[in-house]
Image 1: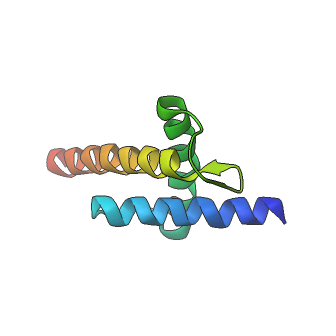
Image 2 (image 1 turned 45 degrees about the vertical axis):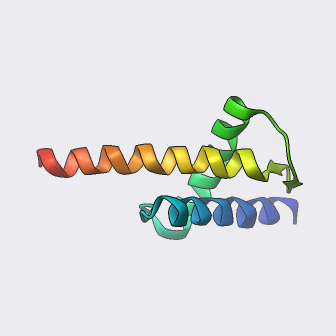
Length: 84
């Protein structure tokens, strides 16, 4: 049950990051989950593990990390569309 809870929270974090940046994450729900997990990892590297935590995700750093990830990913995807 803990793994399922982590998938749900990771998906929500990725979804919130997409809303903040205003860009869709490629891959739909799976992309949101991946962005949530990678964003949580990135956020904990940059900011540490402070703030409220749900399912072993420090929420504030995770969202900030996911926003950074989605923003950089959207820049890369935009650059790839221009060259094609």
